[in-house]
Length: 134
Image (cartoon, rainbow, N blue to C red; front, side, top):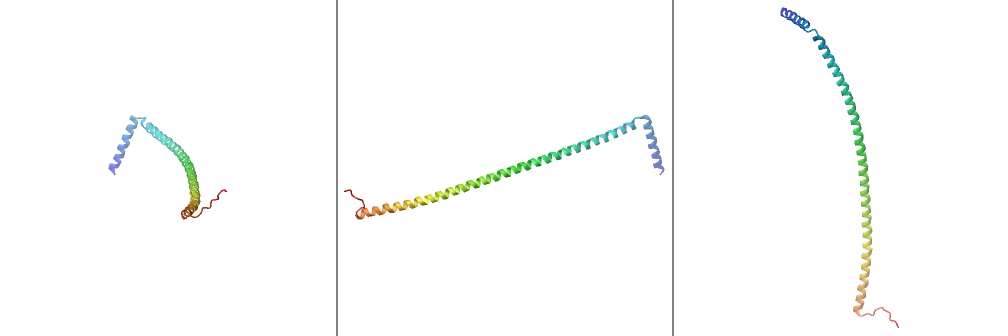
């Protein structure tokens, strides 16, 4: 314990000597501490401002992204509907064309039968059904 008390007395004496040699040191240290505290306070204020602005920016960005996504969804749906409409129109056209082809095919078959029957009659020597003017 004796060493500690001598050490404390020595430190106190050294501190006292330094204070007497440099009277403005204590005031300078207090000023430095106050300036550091002031800088920290300003940094906190700036951090809060930046944080607030960043939050506002993120909200705006999220809103704009949502608006773009909504527009994109609407456009995709419109294109899907347009594609479906075109598909249905093409299918209807193909069906109608198929029906017309079937009618033409039926008419051609009837015409071919008629021509074949007339050709068969003319080969067999049967009199034709033509009228003679007379």
